[in-house]
Length: 208
Image (cartoon, rainbow, N blue to C red; front, side, top):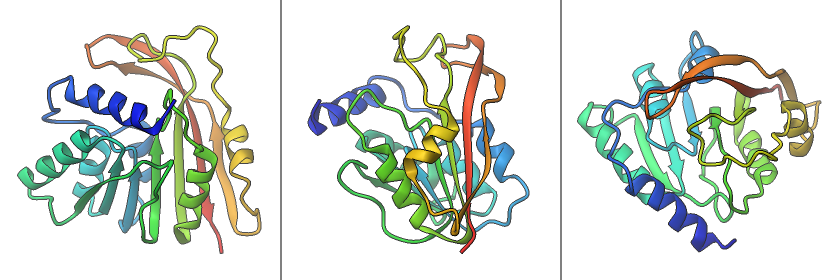
């Protein structure tokens, strides 16, 4: 599938539904980041902007990126309306073609999964290399199919966190895997339904 197909798909996803007025942060982000000293953070695949806005409220300076221009424009407007425009910069990037500039104390990639061609390992490797010493890469993937997921393929297989880490292939002398597990939780979908879901959580810290 082409890049044009991917852009069109995600523009239709966001443009086809009302703009979120109070998006919430992802559970694993809040769980991991609470208590860390704020710094510069890169939010890959920012979507409706719940993570970016929450991080900004905690004192982080956020660079938030998405393939969808609709998502980027809506997040920019939300940040300004909440007086967070000086802490949130939203940019459009297709990670298959470009990666944001800069160095960061945290890179967050939540549910960066797509039905289109994306060399995730290369993108996540670039994210790890964009970390400052002591910085953290948090990758949270779907480990199960929620009833409201756009992908209901019964044959889908979700790579484990250890498999994702192996694919990124980082030098253990410079990066340490601090967490790689598959916790479960009760999640609420956009239509209000609840279901038990599995998250695949990978937390890597740059040590040198």
